[in-house]
Image: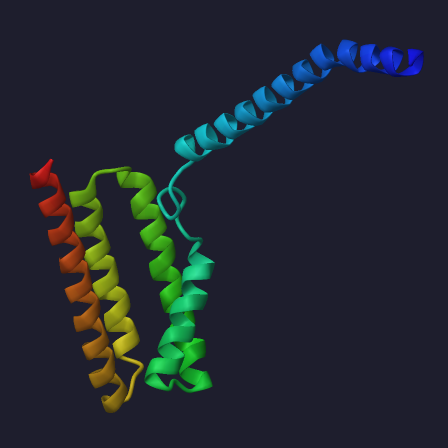
Length: 156
């Protein structure tokens, strides 16, 4: 019987320590959760900060045009530097105009038109037709985004 009483008293004396451990563990878990949530709130949304590097833009756009227009290797070799030059000019525009959407839009429009006309000069008649269709779709998407932004501004 003494063993049972002694062992019971040992467990009884451990009870406050175990409760304290559970409380501290729960507090640590809650604190970690709050830190993670706060980190998520202050993090920049994806796609909203740094621009994609001009080389990456060139790689993606060249691959897209090669597939969509069925470009020859010779055409790709001539078009790639044109796209890179346009992407670098676009990056420079964003850095110089910092947040002035109208100024960025105007400068980007003329840069894109110049790039597209240089590319167009290297294409066959069938490729030019397809390229013009692609440009029309790109323009429509841009106008949709601009209208959506305008609606969002008016709704606020």
